[in-house]
Length: 423
Image (tube, rainbow, N blue to C red):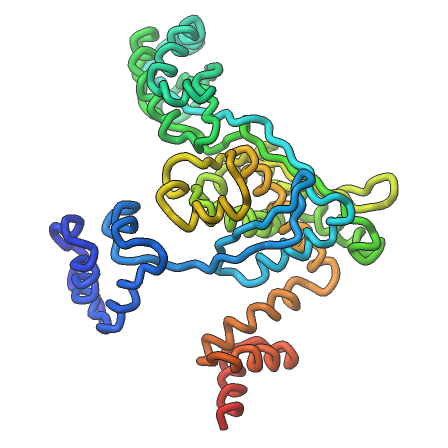
């Protein structure tokens, strides 16, 4: 039934159990909900309550391991947190098929992040641009004073860019980019603090008014790259190769296809980002903005043929991830995930994630070019459908197998199979 009001005075001041009890009361939920949400799994309730506001429980996501990966000559196990069937299997299969070719070779453009300071209400924006550039040394001093710990670890201010943007409600605006090396941190807090510190000085020098002071998630100075080669023998011959190339061409010239194509890339990327406690929304925003940098939304990957006729794939995308701060440090499972990967630097993490994105894309394109995406996906999804129908234990595999063999993976059919099994 509809709740009477979502206005719950003092809700944030309640303890987590009391918040949960209040939600159950106001929403008219069954008392069994309390037991479900009170179980926070392997994450201590006190940690849950410290991570977000108005916490009442946790939402557990399956954590799987992608095998077969070789990244820069090193075997790596990849923790992936996702609710979607076939994602982990896709990475395993893609990695297995390029192991004999050396696996994935990766690189990173650097660990630079951008903070933007918006200047408005300035009559002579081009003049103001030069005024800001003339104070480059002073900006360096202020930025480095803002985060001496980052400076101690080899990071800190690196450069500035100043752009004049035309249009909008406020007319011309002057945008200062602070270019900051954030090292092993994702860097949002560091660059935001620097932008806050520099903003009053920019207003003072120019006579304008500083407004927004915030990082950019288009981290195009922090690009992760990966490449790999799949031999014709490994993938099933020229027809498969050419089908993959055709599927890529479609995605690269049509935004409607590219949106789903890149979603597939992010299936793998976001799963590793989430498993390691990093910001999935930041990485996703940067990826999609980068895919549209030409003025048209395009593929994040590229596929070609080498001199021997083998299939070669490449990916290049912003990868703002870190090992310091946020859930990466506070969430014990995130720390375990990094240990599983044997990852001690943000650079290695970014490079591995790029390789996973490329692997995910290979498997999706190969499926589209051969059996179709549904066959493999539905074979794995059938288990979810069996559970939805009420199957338990050995029943799950039996029901799933019959669903796949029948070619129709639906809950109503699963219920019929289950009823028959149970007599």
